[in-house]
Length: 284
Image 1 (spheres, helix red, strand yellow):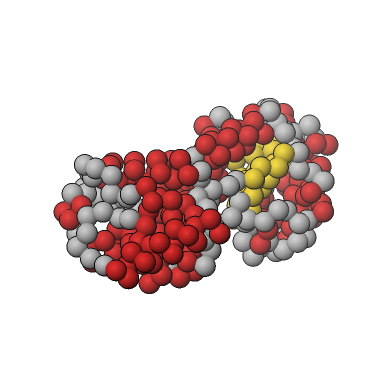
Image 2 (cartoon, one colour; image 1 turned 90 degrees about the horizontal axis):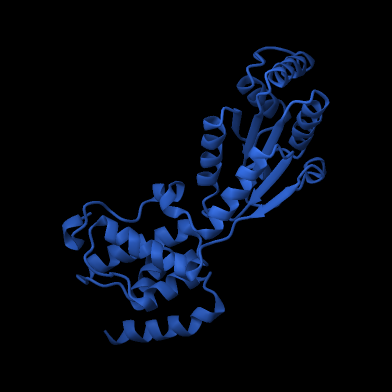
């Protein structure tokens, strides 16, 4: 990777940016504010949904960090492919309920005692569950039982659910007080991100032309992970062609060669742009 070719001090498009503040847009800030509202106002349960690559992991981590800074007991679990027993044990362990080797009834008894202890000292508890949509359907019963148990003990408990698809569990659907949908960046946010990323890396001028940004937005619908991937491929393609500017034709060529799945995702509005880009490629 030749940073000197572009005058970069570092490569501007990397996957880790998806989990950083660099990938936060207006819709993300609004979603984050709503998550904090649930944490601060002792709401029972909220869900955040969005396609893969929209920055859910970033908001998951930011929310967990905020809860800890505020002195909450914070329990963060990735529930991907978990069954009821696994989820129960994960929550119990982070609640310091010493569940290792205990029976289910004993584990729940210890969790009840821990919630009661926190109610006495008025310490709020926040449970964040990632990938709840890929956990076993019955895991919803675990979380509903926890919420009902906390309510009976007058223990402040907020549950934040993160998923790609809306929560399917009926037990959870009836508990959710706030549903948040995370969408991709707007055209302006995509353009700003690309410009900031390249200039922060050391670029002295705009590398991506306006028509390139138009096509990137149409192909990705503003999904941060896809924007980063396509811009990364386009920069590499430009270097291979000894070009110092990325236009729509180059974006399309890079996508067609290295990321064909994005080529078929294009919004209908981008078809005319892609046809013009193809004509440009064929005449060069």
